[in-house]
Image 1: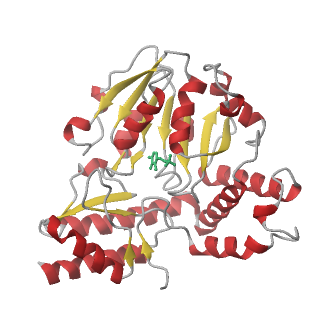
Image 2: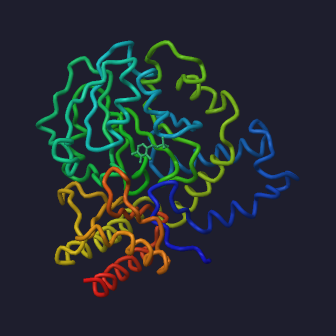
Image 3: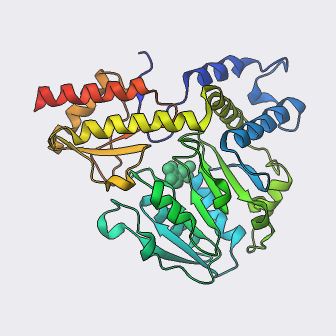
Length: 366
Ligand SMILES: *Cc1c(COP(=O)(O)O)cnc(C)c1O
């Protein structure tokens, strides 16, 4: 079988040129006489890979110099657990603005060691919107305010006016989970205390996460923790306190380089806007055959959940989609229905193929 258009939410589709390069260097990397999997992370060959990946990521995301970048093993959930340990005092208030499943996960990871408060939540409305800025209940003494830039399961994204209001959150630094939307459009990182992402949605393979943090936050004492969980120590050691996930770091670097070669985040913003517009138009123009329930101003460009008018057709839809070369469209079990993830590596032709298929499916099963 040839490669299908893969709408997986994560681990997600990677650019084919990246996979080919990774394949080519699997047996022998440069003139090392060994695979990149088999060389020391402290040798010059891997150090060069790691430094280039950071330099390219800084260029891609326009990361200001007063922000450190930490690459670490583990996922976004690991970062969610380490945030309160590093940036809050024991029992200190931390404000969470919740617009979906992952915001709740972040609270769960923090609640055992800080006073993790829900400053606002759109759960009562089924997470079909972001909580209005006017309704946030911020704590005067919060260590930070946390939000999820893009809710991967609920398909809710902080955009435009919502995002501009959110980043003026107040005194506490804003910390944002960008796992499923990092590098999807230009972002003013200076508005945030920290942003983070697991790599497997938009940056590369699973197994590595990226934390971009304003350096003054690294001076906070946080609370008792093992040295390996200390972000300041990781930053000082250039993310090599212990053996980093070197293969993942390498493939992340290839993915970042590919994004730069394609034209950077401004170009991906244009592509992503066109892809999302195409799919939402197909859903909204289907006369109710397909529907998306998210408020128009909070619709995600990256993850589009949608439902068939008759859930009894879901299985057939997925089977026929697969035969048409469109895979991983099944919705998350929390919501059911379908979900199409349209990360940077999903070409516009893939979304066109999806909307063509959806139209044909409706004609055949209408
Ligand atoms: C996938 C995802 C997570 C969880 O990532 P893991 O790497 O599995 O820990 C957290 N937040 C968001 C927004 C995600 O999309």
